[in-house]
Image (tube, rainbow, N blue to C red; front, side, top):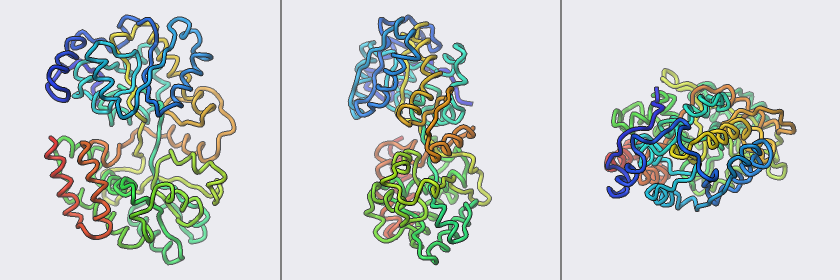
Length: 438
């Protein structure tokens, strides 16, 4: 079970020593993570410039559902460029000036990260459970946050699943049903090719739409903790059960499943290929709903869009019930200022954000929707229902990689899918990069 506490002594990892010492001095064992801190003068919220939706929805709560909390402790917004988040938060932490609620880098809030190790992040499960509001966090979202951050240290303002979008009309024409195993997926691809349809639209230019397939094969083959074993040095990407993921992707490419020129295909062009009926399937995230629900882009009709999980690998330890998911950028809370008024704010957000964001902006979050929201497109409703059913999630192939290895995975996948690199070479180079970063 994932530890809920973040009271570890600071380590020398991460920031320069002087910064770590500073963080320790202003946090350490005295940090509180259950709402026992002293309230600040305002409920300051630091978000990324690029995420205007979050600021707008929190402001709407302040003016309506959380008006009483706002009158007791006014909300104030602070902004930073997404790319400057780590630098900005590190500086604020070293000055003992962290906002009450703030964006942070993924590695910073993990138990061995600079903030996590210094006890500078709130454990939301503990805080919201004590406030009686924990039930407002969807189990799937809690599972995802814990997978990615090593604890419940971020609120799920966004929530996305990844899976295979498919064209129901093409499937019906060819006589296909949703593949339940990877072998059935390969067989379906062959039948689609024989019928004159391109099986997949994958944006090779971006890299990740291809590496995700490697990762999903590995999760289904090895189990939900597959990539944690790689991170922790308990397994190697060159082990046969991991190598099979690269072999599976190469087989799909060599079979012609991705069509001509997929290596240079951009994400928007891949989406257009699927929504115009030029491809039968597309592995992608539910962020694609904004394209799918757009009548001008979606030429195949909402009624013809299906969404299914990556299928099982026969004999594998994983399950189709374990959907890959992400919950947006980390949004932590400062335990030193998590007093009763801040706790009341976080409780109100947990209770109301799901309905507010869905009804006003069509955003699917990891919060329970506690009120009725009408006029939701059928595809959005379909995803919403799947999210509500999920108890366990997995991350994605590169989620736990260092930055250099993350980039290498995407760069070399082109060589893998064009046969210029063998699966053994691809995984060996990637594992060497991961080992070098330890």
